[in-house]
Length: 77
Image 1: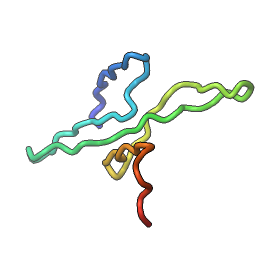
Image 2: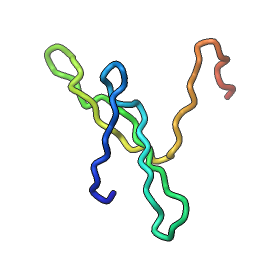
Image 3: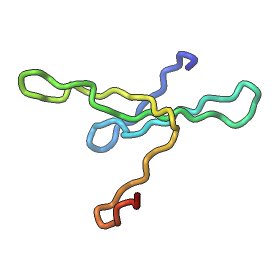
Image 4: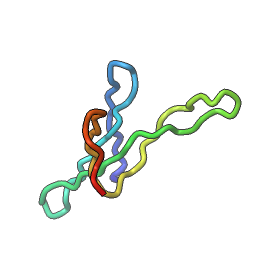
């Protein structure tokens, strides 16, 4: 990362997006590399178990999981 701060737009519920993609330009002028980050809970309080906010975790595979609908068949082994 080059130290820039990118704005994160909040959704209608006030939460940041579940997935965040950061395009990183290639040094040779080729297509940019896209870094993928997933929103995860930052932690929980000890007494009440309430969530303490959000943080983003890097996904090294660079691919989002496909949505799983409740009416679809489970994947075959």
